[in-house]
Image 1: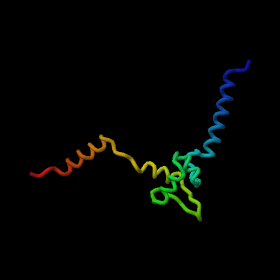
Image 2: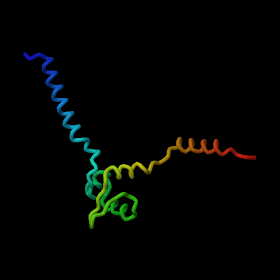
Image 3: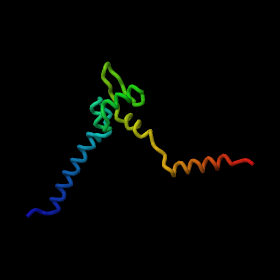
Image 4: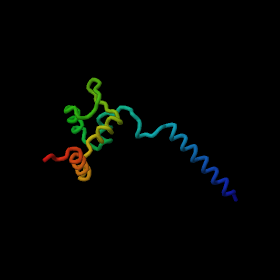
Length: 106
């Protein structure tokens, strides 16, 4: 029968090797390789025609090389999260701040 401590050490060694391999490759979500329309469509779960509409409006960051469109993942993430909708709490807070800074004069 094997020593349980040896089994634990072997497993720890395997876990360490796996972590080293993953950290050497880097996280997949942070890659900044250019995406095409098909990859972007799968990433943001939107139809390719909607993406073409966004590019023609100039509302989505993109790069054009000939007839092909390319997108950077970090720019797309920034574009997605730039359209935050304020909650009721945020609106109340801003209104109170405005009232405090601009008191009513009688």
